[in-house]
Length: 219
Image (cartoon, rainbow, N blue to C red):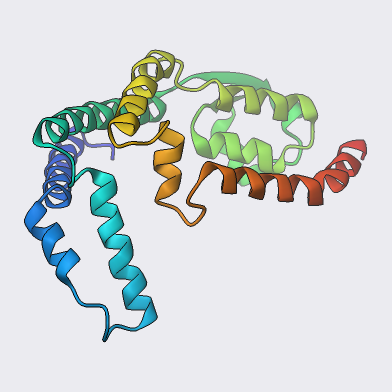
């Protein structure tokens, strides 16, 4: 949002919502009610939903000792702050390049009009998502597309330092909860359930599409 006050209030409200979410997921009273719930009269969909809710509480650490829960809370707060910083660095990134208008053949005139620098034959392309997507979607010249890709992929260089703190924190969180790494922890909450299942899916997709992709590259 362009208004700084709005962003500050939104961040504060989000923090309160996340804190409430974490307190509920760590509340043994709520967990006990979920454990006591009878599934005999529930349909299969409701049984599955209840099972996933119980799992979510367990994955969050409701069964852990109080000192472990305290460590989890500290880690989650640190991780949330780092993730917010990561997103903020991307949102505030304002790098740009200037490309000859002639290199942007294919980009519709209505999109290109507000990017042309007055009195020149150059267009200003920033690291904003809309600018990048316009070039990648419409520009026909490979050089312009490569420039846009480079601008997109090198956004938020400050995030190198953020990741150096975020990745170890996530790893520590996962290990406290009994997972070998954060990937295993995050995947457990998805339909795939495990890293091995994800790898199997990737291999299936690779095997079925590799030939078509190689043919595409030869075009």
